[in-house]
Length: 51
Image 1 (tube, helix red, strand yellow):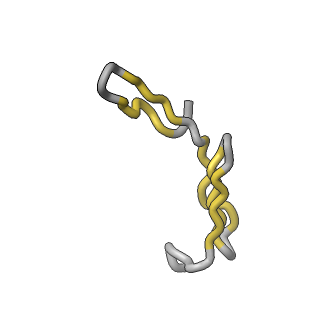
Image 2 (cartoon, one colour):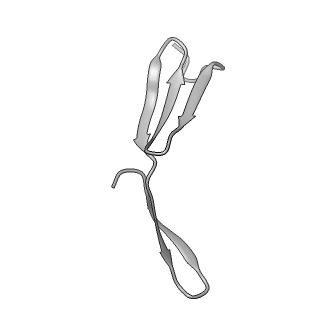
């Protein structure tokens, strides 16, 4: 079975990101959480994914 398939669907939801591959089902189901830190002149991404 090939690792990649040309037939995928991506759901960029407000809580979760889902990737569905034809013939394999859901291959990725991750929370879409991003934590940022803002200083005076800089915004830094602190964490991405699971809380």
